[in-house]
Image 1: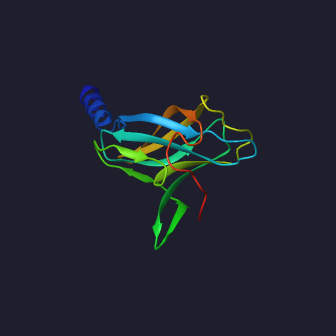
Image 2: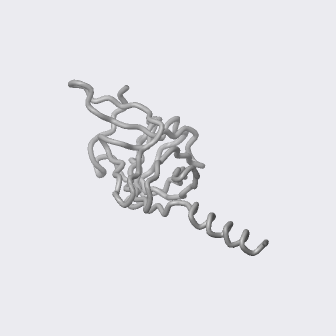
Image 3: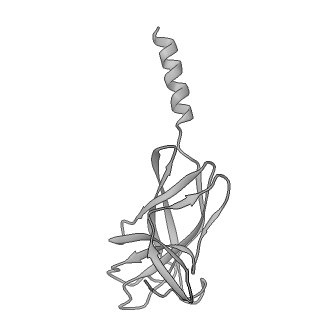
Length: 150
């Protein structure tokens, strides 16, 4: 009786495996002395329907998922709880849209350095983490300026 239970358990665990998530073109905006915020951007693709539900960094104390969108004639930015990652479709985090806010910076982010980020992905009721390194790009080389508007 134990062998069929073992086979059933293995089959169930195979069905509950985590999503395969690929992150490409991860970068952060370099900062100047005294600047306390920056943004992180990337492309995320999941092989199953999933959600980006959190981001942390060993190097930065406060990290949030944000969205910028037009509200009438004003571009507004707000923290959001998650970003949907539809199966097989790349989702871009970019200036002027979804992005990761890096806040309460203790020191400048210098162009060329790597910033460690840990993404928390939820799929099928399970959570997994994906560790990435985002390369800092000099201001003006990665898209439109990143203002902080609420």
